[in-house]
Image (cartoon, rainbow, N blue to C red; front, top):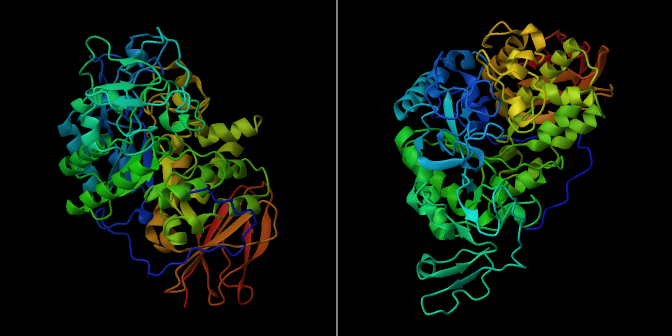
Length: 597
């Protein structure tokens, strides 16, 4: 399918229609994903007790790229802290057994698998994070609090075990294309199987079983002692990998290349498809989790997802989890949602992380660009999602993450001389846009404690507990957050996010109501509504991204005559039928509610 052109015009009356009345918030099993508010945490950096992890390898709490000791047992003790933010679902970095060191070397200058994305054993919990019993305890305690638990999973790659004879030591093997180095597969009698095979079609397992020889772009081998490094054991067969060298993240290499040397799985093969279905059905069956976030989903062939996603969703329903949800990481930095929509249509993803949202909101929060036009741009492709604009309401939206950095850092990068008080106010505004617009908001751990960070990757994965990393201890934190741990419910950002989360949870209209952009004529002022068409209940949200007071008349429903403030000062009555006057202080927002007909 060719990628459709993004819609460039500004839609001032853009809305999300619903064919159902909004129910009240439900328990975790019956609650649809659209009703959730999520909290994303890097497990190794979130919570620990004194001495946790001290006797395990690759633990160095002073090194930002090593394990620090955060674990499941300590995270379970912080669930009330998380719930206090209005959170109804948590997403943790992968908990599976990881390769310890980059290149499998205990090299202090390198990195470790603390983040969880270098998986070797897909069927067991990494001892750094705890035991299966501790995982069961965390899930049970979360469910007692009506909090869902999402696992972070990977199918694109495994830890780096396979080596290429053409490359020695730490040499990066350049990507070799299919055109220059086509696959050659032969049976026991020396005859080709599937003539013209290019590595991009599903083969039959019957033909695959006949193979005795396979030529690749490089000559792959398993180092001595690593023949059974992965679990389940089928992952140790080098025929199940692309073996084409390092990805350039462009063209075909984005699907077939090795990420930083990680072994790129041959996901076109039916044995691989069924193998990963079996793995991730196992975790659902044993732990009754509520959903998956899938890493590097963009870099796996579409045909894999067309089989995997329906199989996982159907299995979850058969195990009594009717609202199991899957969302993929489809990192697209073009500022458009077209690619995300394509993945919900073609790859059968119920949702895809909305990178278009975070890019635009970062600029808006920094006070840059035409606020109304830029905000409208985020949602112009919503009708392209599976399910149309209703389906877009399932889109996971975020402003900070563990890869491209925290919102405060990204704003400061755009406006280097911004003062701390203004920066904190702008972080608050961005979260208001996230928590009240369409989509499922994802809070990134530590943002509620004023974390800024100094970059992306490990520079945005600070310890919430008392840190021994000098850079983490010394870096600026908004709101006066000092040393020690950072679980302060009185922090001004925690309180601000908690108020927003509570308001979102209280009113179904703020979660799944029609999303309608409203023009206002004031520069830097963003206005939109959430509407319940069944009752006529309306919420008008106005966010002022400038430092000046803004007064503006905003279009509302003709039946919305009586109003009151849920946050900020709101007039008691509409000025005239269909028009409501708002007054929003600089770097502030208001939420006004009309109960409807």
